[in-house]
Amino acid sequence: MLMSKLFIQTLREFPNDAEAISHKLLVRAGYIKKLMTGSYTYLPLMQRVLSKISNIIREEMNASGAQEILMPFVQPSSIWEKSGRWAVYGKELARLKDRSGNDMCLAPTHEEVVTSLTEGILSSYKQLPVNLYQIQTKFRDEIRPRFGLLRGREFTMKDAYSFHTSQEDLNREYDVMAETYTRIFNRCGLETRAVQSDSGAIGGKVSHEFMVLTDTAVGENDVFYCDKCGYSANSNHATSVLNELETDGGFSAQEKVLTPDVKTIDDLANFFNIKTNNILKSVFCIVDDKPVLAMIRGDKEIEETKLLNAVQGLEMRYGTDDEIYEYFNCEAGFLSFLNVSDKIRVLFDDSAKTMKNFVIGANEKDYHIVGYNFDKMPETVDISLVKAGEKCPVCSAPLNVTRGIEVGNIFQLGTKYSQPMNACYTDEEGNLKPFIMGCYGIGVTRVAAAAIEKFHDDFGIIWPREIAPYQIIVVPVNVADELQVKTANEIYETLKNNGVEVVLDDRDERAGVKFKDADLIGFPLRVTVGKTINEGLVEFKVRKTGEMIKIKPDEVLNYFKEYTK
Picture 1 (cartoon, rainbow, N blue to C red):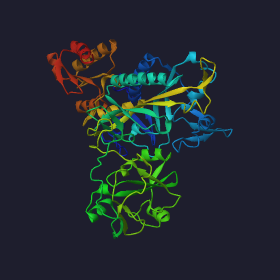
Picture 2 (cartoon, helix red, strand yellow):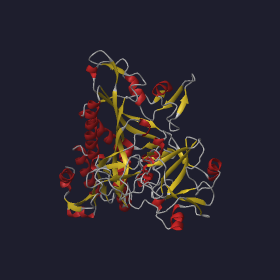
Picture 3 (cartoon, helix red, strand yellow):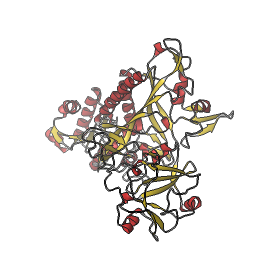
Picture 4 (spheres, rainbow, N blue to C red):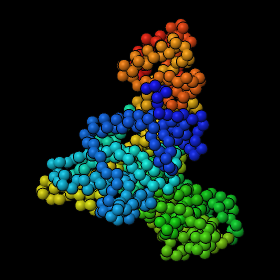
């Protein structure tokens, strides 16, 4: 490909609306162009990257025994009503009507479609197991689309669905998919960690996310892990063993105490000269327009996904001062579960279990109660966010934390979809049984964005070789110099004729512009034909390491092969 013919425009500045480095670089380097919020056109360079990722996925999925299909992007409401998700999926589901007034939606996922697909095709245990996958566009009307391709509304995804006669066979396929995913991500140049995770709207009780660990600020989730035993989990699923020491507030009797204008946990701890873990704090929120009061130890924070799961909610926000006064007839800072209305659902976090003689709000302005103890321990649930240094739930070693970007996930669905949709097979005795299902997703566009988050520098993208749009660029420094142009063209033709993905920068631009564009775009290798050609030498540069050596023009192909082994 000639650079002068490549459909691309590189920018000198980052776009103003971009936060993530992957978003900034993809726009500036001419990979994507925004159409609307959360939706982008993939330009030729991006399309080449996505095609390479997709091909790697196809090769590994086919090798695992899965079979590729392609399902409709627009789906009827009827199958969603069968599964029970039409009414509960949330505002991320983009709904529309056709000309006949039928309710439809743009596909955020394909569990319903693939389950209905089995009717009339998979009828006997002899046909199982089966794993079907597709690489398809998805649309989710995200409330806060951001970070470019990391959290867009429209995106490309590989999703696979397996059908089984037993839990044991699902477990086997689940392990096969975990191994397949590891190979896929390794081939894309990404090291991932499989972490326990929340199943979210997909459903199922067992799920893992494959996370690219990164130091960038846009890592979507905290990943907690143990160096000793290998435990790892997403923040919305991670648990820990809390230190039970010093959870006794030390008060000798229960008493209501005047605490004027003492509203925050830290102020309350200072007022009574106690630790924050001697306070049971109240967190008031609204879940799906219903009031929920969460009671949690003062040194802990609410993990929103855990709380939503505990109340089977879809959307959560924290209550306003006006709402607090409406439900409690009290100001924020003095709330508790005592004598609250039956309209308010109260949750107690597991961290409350070991608390004794602690402090709570009195549900009265400027008052708290000290020395409180439960007459009978209420039922508790894990709704707290784990902190680094807390004990591993497996081996009690201290937990570490890092940031991670999800690039894939696997779920054990069980009969969540097959049972309500009456998707069944006939077993060996002739009985109808619902399929036991698994679900396996990879964000194709997310893989590309995560690679940039992981591999970049101040000059631009550093693509892993396996998914780079082109492998090498040849740059003649001065297009007015006949020898430089002749040598550059000969190198270009030699590489191209040997199947190398190569670009020749034939533009009449300054050398500095060409070098900056080459680094910005992220070509793994660069051959520069400059003044040293008068000595019979060209420069061969490795983008990742910055290594640069002078070689003869007829050695370029051999050096390319050596560096791409």
